[in-house]
Amino acid sequence: MSDATTTDTPVLTRGFSCLCCGSQDSTISLDLDFCDQFRCDSCNETFATDDLEAHLAAGQRLLRMAAAAKAAGLADLAKTAE
Ligand SMILES: [Zn+2]
Image 1 (cartoon, helix red, strand yellow):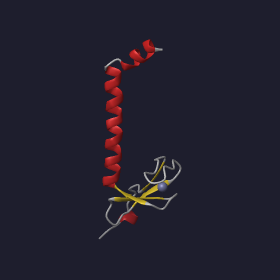
Image 2 (cartoon, rainbow, N blue to C red):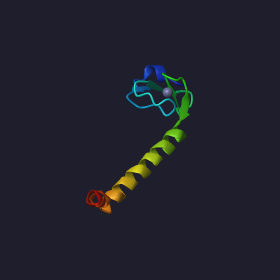
Image 3 (cartoon, rainbow, N blue to C red):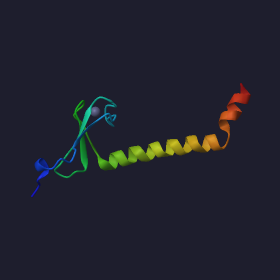
Image 4 (tube, rainbow, N blue to C red):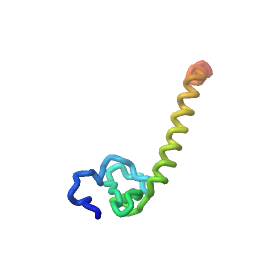
């Protein structure tokens, strides 16, 4: 059924820091059995698309916090407090 070997769909990527070991140089491969698991070449650990979504959601919260602080003028407050 699966003809994954005949497609040119990319299943490997570099330059993403692994959720498990944090290595920026690792190669992350996609598990083609279910397409919902990644494996890190450096630490050989797997993480799921759900784990990645939770990780990215946490990153979004940090970005919103930074944007809210900027909008509230907290950077100016910190400067005047020096
Ligand atoms: Zn890793």
